[in-house]
Length: 382
Image (cartoon, rainbow, N blue to C red; front, side, top):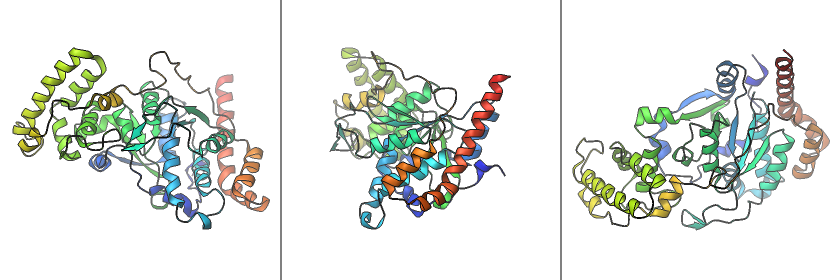
């Protein structure tokens, strides 16, 4: 068995990554659950990178802001018994695990131009209090950092579509609405060990019939981050049925390419088609007729701000902005000495504790990255 396939001995604090945090469209993960693949993370990185990619590393972009938000509620009511900086310590174990992969890892953070309101709550424009420490720790592990101009999930999806990364690690289903190809959900190490849940946009389209536009339509109808209500009374399951009629693809096209009166006229026809489908469900995709729901459809639906938030999200590729460069040919090496100092200062670990934890958790990843660097040099010399 290769060293990278051995499960890490992780503390119970990491198990709480299975905590459910509201991200994206409520209920959509459940609807697409049949599309998931359960695969060992190490096997995925090796087979999709080195074996299928002819020696390439399996590049992963991590939703750093989503990971931070997932960790912080865990210790809200037990902070006094969890030791120093338990949230940051949890992310330390996540990073240690990622060093054991034949991968280049990019941590992506929310930027200053995020929408001002999400899920009916005001969004702070300043970085999360953990961001600076997470960025510092990522560099010490040899990872890359990147701050999006707007939302991290939109930036992650654009990185995926541009071919900069092979997969995204996130619990935010909106990544698919923004166009991501492959999403790995944050692992629940307690229950799954090295296994992760992998979702691919192509399989979601084939098995569930939800394209990128169809997923956006579900968000618009059932409610999501930018409008929690949507079309009042329309749940995610009904919205998925409506999406089978192709209304999502046409809506996405309009939102991307039409403006002004042209968009207004197109939406008028689109609403008429939606009303017809709600009233009659001609191909039985929804499973029942919804004339009452059709009556609630106003001429101001959908909200253009919500529509454009999904169809035209702010990213580094937006007009007048510089596109982030691809990562260098190899990942940086973990800085073990400075990482030990970091752990001493942030977690209050003694030299004995650092020695014990690094032996079991950090050094295996250091060895993997050293071997990968040596193999890269051999290939280049040939």
